[in-house]
Image 1: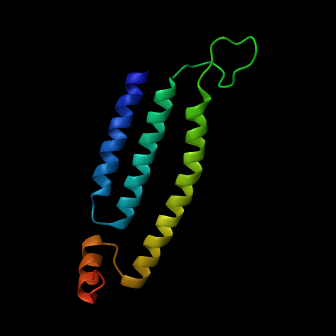
Image 2: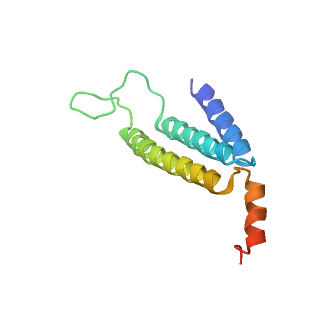
Amino acid sequence: METIVAILVGVLFAVGLYMMMQKTMLRVVVGGNLLSYGTFLALILSGGLNKGMVPVLVEGVEEYVDPVPQALILTAIVIGFGMTAFQLALAYRTYQETGTDDLDELRHEDEGNGAHE
């Protein structure tokens, strides 16, 4: 099971990085999300995939799952949701102002305005 999850992490990283190198803002946002999902799975994998064990240590339980990766992932999901909403709002507002979501066109538009200086 851990091998399958490790392969899935690699696929999510590869697809996420590929999409982040695209020219449109929406693909960059989606690629960032895929990269974060790969990170979440890597964190789960670091804690171990032990099915049927409790994440909280109580008396009488000798085997348990480390709760720290789960707590980190829950926090990261909330932060990631907020960041995605902000990125989508920023991309939409940029599209409204410039009429394009192509990053190369936006870069040329900034160079023409002298904004990079």
